[in-house]
Image (cartoon, rainbow, N blue to C red; front, side, top):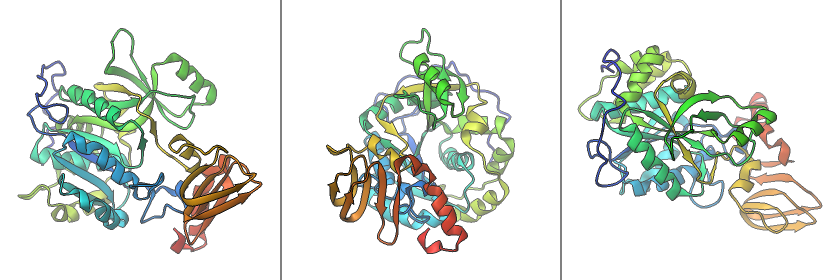
Length: 390
C-alpha cells in the first residue's frame, strides 16, 4: 500500500466547515475512529496485575476494568469503529471483556506478536483506517488511564477533532495540579491565543522537582497524557517524514477485500513486527513534527501508575485508608494504608502508610513510598522461575 510519502505537505490553513451532527463526525461526515492502546504489562500493580491480565484488564477502582471504562467513555461519541491494539498474550481476555460492547459499535482486536512501543501500534492502526478512509480522523487513547470527568474528555476531543481535520497532529495536555516529577511535560505557546488549541514548542522529559515547580508556576507546561487526535493520512505522512523505515514496512501491507479482517492480516503483522524496531510515537514523530497542536485538559486525569496512586482516584476513609475490592477493612490504629483484599476482609493493626494487596495466591506488603519498586518483585519472580505468579 502506498503511504503517499512523496505527496507533499498538506495545506494546514485550509478551511473545513464544522460538521452539523456534532463532535463524533469528521470532515466527510463520517464518525471518528477510536484506537485504544492496550498492550501494557502493568507490573507495578502486581500481584493483581499479571502478564495475561495486566492493569488495563483489571478493575483497579472496582466496577468495570480500565479497558472497559475506556470503551464506555467514548461510546457517547458514536464512533464508527474501535480498534484495540493489544498483545498476543492478552488478546483472549481482551476479546472476552469487549464482546458485550459489539452490539453498540464494531470492535476489532489487533494482537501484536511482540511489544514494539507505540509508534508501530499507531502506524498499524492508521494503515488499516487509511486503507478504508484516508482522511478519517482517529483518536488514540491509552487503555489504562483514569478520567473522572468523562464528559470533559469528550469536550476536549471535540476541540481536537476540529483541529485535526485541518491537518494538525493534536495532543491532549493535562493541566498540572502539582509539581510532578514522574510525568513528561509539553511546553505550549499559550500567549494571546484564547482558549486554544495552542502550538507546541517542545516536549520535556521528566524533570527534577525544582524544574517541575517552575513549570507549574509558568502555566504553559502541561503533562503529556499520551492521547492524540489526527487524520490517518496526516500521521502517515509524518511517519514517512520522520520514521521512513517504519513507514516503508507499513506501506508493504496488502489488504484484502475486507480491511477489517484482522485474522487475514495476522501473518503480515507477524512479519512486520519481526523487522521494525521499538519506538514511541512521542520520540519518533511528535517531538520532531512542526504541525503539533495542544488542547489543554482539566478532566481529573491520572495514569494510575502504581498502587500509591490510588488516593488520586478513590476517596480515602476518615482514617486516610484507601480500599478497593475489599468487603471490610478492620483498621486498628492504622492510617494512610492502601488495601486491596481480593473480595475479602483485611485487618491491619498499628501500621501506617502501607500497601497491602492480596490476589488470592500472592500477597504484597510494602511502604507506600516504595510502591514504584513492585516491578522489582516481578523481576525477582522471573529470575527464580516462579512464572506461575507472573
